[in-house]
Length: 318
Ligand code: ATP
Image 1 (tube, helix red, strand yellow):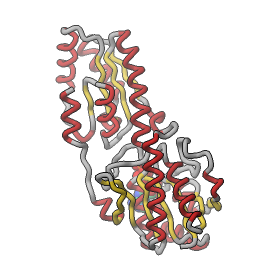
Image 2 (cartoon, rainbow, N blue to C red):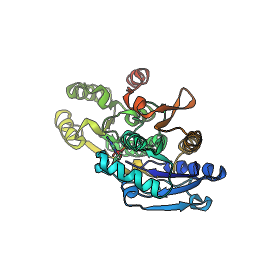
Image 3 (tube, rainbow, N blue to C red):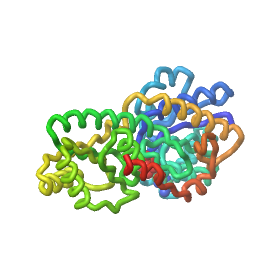
Image 4 (cartoon, protein in one colour):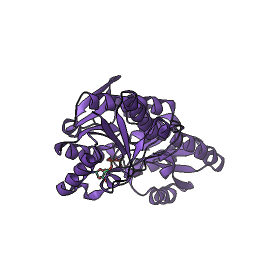
C-alpha cells in the first residue's frame, strides 16, 4: 500500500489521539502516505481530507478527544452512500483505511471493505463493550475519571450523612460501573447486564445499615439503569435518608489518557498499519489474553461479551 487513511468515528474516547499518532508515525516510517479524514464517515463523504505528516501528530499523545473530530453518519447504512465513500477513497488514492471507533463504526468499515477499500478497525470506546477484545481504548481513563468523582461525592455524602446515587456511563454495558463500584467500595452497583435488582431490597439494606450507625450509602448506577434522579426521590421517600443523584456524564469521555490507554492505543494503531501493509482487510484489532490479535469484522461483531461473573460476585462480597 502507498496511501492509507485514518478516521475516528462514533463516540470519542481518551487515547484516540495516541492511536492516530501511532497510525501516522508507523505508516510514514514505512514510506506509506497518510490522509487524515476529519469527522468520521461523514467527513469522508464530504472529502474533509488532509495530508498528515510527522508533525501533524506532535503533542497529541497526552490529549483527550480526537484531533480528527468525530461524527455520526446515519446514512452510512445505505449501500449507495458506502459506494460513494469508496469512490472518494479511490479519488484520493486511499487504498487502506484505519477506522478507530466502536461496533457501529466497524459495520461501516466492513461495508467499505466490500467496495474494495481495505479496512481495519481499532477498538476505541470508553464503554469496553466490544465483544472481540478484552480492552478498548478509553476505558481506563473513563474509569479513573469516574472514581475520582465518586471519591469527592463520598466526602460530601459522609459529611451530610446522605445516600448518593452516582450515575456513570454505559447505556448497555456495566463495565465502568462495575470497576468504579469495586474501586470506590460502593454499597450497590446496578448494571444493565444484571438488570434484576429490587429497589425494595436496596431500601431495606439502607435501613438496616443505618441502624448499625452507617452514615452514608453509595450506589453506582450504569446509565442504562434509568432515571437516577427519580430513583433518588423514591429512595429518600422510602428511607427518610436524604438522597441525591450525581450524573458524571461527558466528563468521563475527556481528559488526558492514562498510561494504559496510551500504550494500548499505540500498540493497536501500529498493528492496524501492519495489517494493512500485509494486504489484510475487513479486520479488527483486539487484545485477547494479553496478546494483540485481529479478527474478521463479521466474526468479531457476532461475538458476545458479558461482564466477568467473578468480578460481579466480588463486588457483592466486599
Ligand atoms: P460508540 O458505541 O462508542 O459510540 P460506535 O462506532 O459504535 O461507537 P455508532 O454511532 O454506532 O458508534 O457508529 C458510528 C458510525 O458508524 C455511524 O454514524 C455510521 O456512520 C457508521 N455505522 C453504524 N452502523 C452502521 C451499519 N450498520 N452499517 C454501516 N455503517 C454503520
